[in-house]
Length: 134
Image (cartoon, rainbow, N blue to C red; front, side, top):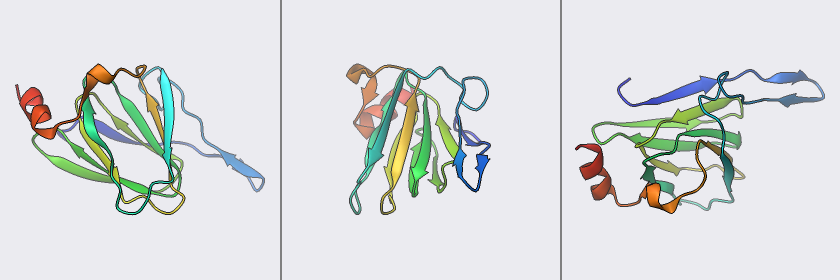
């Protein structure tokens, strides 16, 4: 594995009344969570993300439905599919990410290691390649 990402399988607790999954720093989340957001109601062939972050690490969880995440480190590409609420995808800094192929009613929860800062985003792929390969 050359890229700095990791698929994390968590424990799901519960019984016939319902299930629970938790994320804790140092247990199944490698960073302190500073921000959380979720992506939902994504239509058809829409792609989300399509950027890299200089300073943020992320944990992505498909809490409902499924989606695919294309990860690119400037040299190689991987596609990970999230299909359940107890599997998370950790993404380190400076990975280009694109989330796509959202199922009907998909909800993708994203936990981030930083507060939002527009200046740490790289939204142009050619600029990303220049920066990551220097």
